[in-house]
Amino acid sequence: MKQSAINIFILVIACSFAACDDEETITTLNYANFTTFAFEQSPALGFCPDTTIGYKCEIINADNQYQFSSSELKLSAASDTTCVWWFYELDTLCWVADKLPYRILSDEEVKEIKSVFANISIQSEPPAECSELAVDPCRIFNFTWNNHEHSDYYCSRDKVTPEQVTILINLIKKLEEPYGYSDKNP
Figure 1 (cartoon, rainbow, N blue to C red):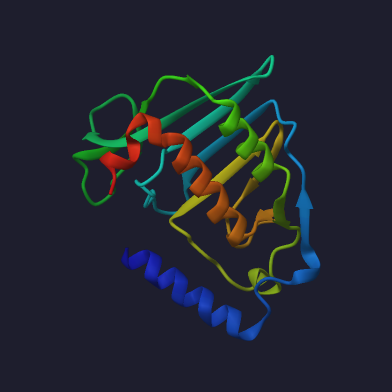
Figure 2: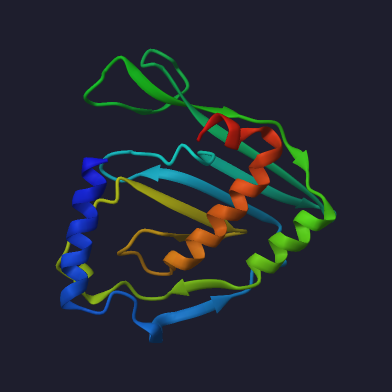
């Protein structure tokens, strides 16, 4: 939490010297006809995952039957062979991804997914200050449609815009509701 506050402070300072979201670099991509979609939280220099959503999720279109799966993070002993990230300051704990079973998505869910995926806002170029600024977001959201990879990392090329990230995360949370995931992570 402290690391995130520092990162936001650095970002605010940087944004006061340059335009953070140059409107000219925003493009809209259409991924409505995807075959596979994947979401994953990845560490930067540290790892402070968002535990209100899955660590990873996947949507597969197999012959127009859409399947969804998610993995939730749980704390485990550092000796666990399935650890995906360790705590440096607590060498006794790590995060483990618990994969939930696939489920078939309803026609209504597929319609909503396609609607969201038809209008993905991407910022093509990183802000100018990124050439002079190091940003450690602690956690990066990665989104992949087929072979097209995008993230929310502030200084990346082809970055998903913050507004679009919110829309995508809300969609993922909604798809996770049948697992009872939102009940487990307030």
